[in-house]
Length: 199
Length: 165
Image (cartoon, rainbow over all chains, first blue to last red):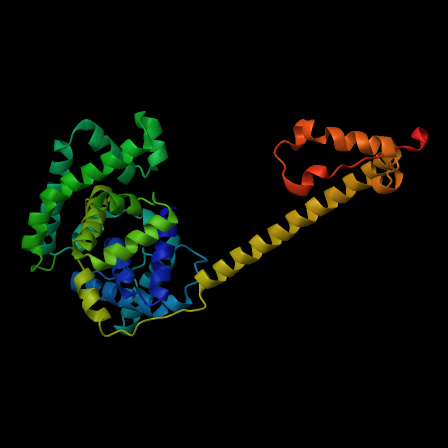
């Protein structure tokens, strides 16, 4: 089943009354939605509140979600509307260069703007996490590093990675898992200490 | 279980496996933590310029005040009904095709069979006394009735054509 089908399965669980499934969707999309909203709402604390509001609105609207579009497209649309309404409620206009649709949200890139809206505290945390992930990645054996990179950055399926790396799909699955787990091992202590500091 | 979570977030599990795993993640907070951290790693690798702070705990806290949402006649139910309806339609179509084919075959072969088939008459009415004695005397040497028992061993079917009269 595809990534979209996994989301659909989570959505259906929420629609059957499983709140925990929505937690999993929040964990999955919180950073993407947060980045999207921070393009509209420049103040980081406000952007964080708007992101939370967008998730709550999405939860309330989920009974009406029929799966005609991908869940993330639907969620991003709610995020954009929530951000715009927030700005209007505060008598501010959305930034003029922020005219894009929810479908474009996956691919937007504006690192300079994102740096601009980050607080020093957030920046430090982000830097520590990014350093930990990248250092761990560099320390991985070549086959694990390649498998994880092909999956996460290139977005290849296991079948495609198996073809590129000339190995069985089961090996790809195992390599990606071992790579993730090795990086996670180095990340967990950092996240534990940051838990009380808005991380 | 961690390896399954890794495969699930890549969309590489079958539907029933995913459903089963999601149920287990719900009951296991460590598994939920693995799901979160694996997604964080992916986000950092794709967008290292900006890693947003973790909102899930705050959203979870706000969600406690939210009522449980239910959509009993949602897409899942409709999809299942559609699947059942399609299966039933496919079965009916298959039965129809088989019936139609057997009718076609039947029309072609029945006349041919009728032409070749000799006219059968009841053995009791037409059997000749000599033949009857012969069969009664030799039936036990017949290889076909060795495994038979009781009265069934005396049962014979005899047919004559009109020419033999």
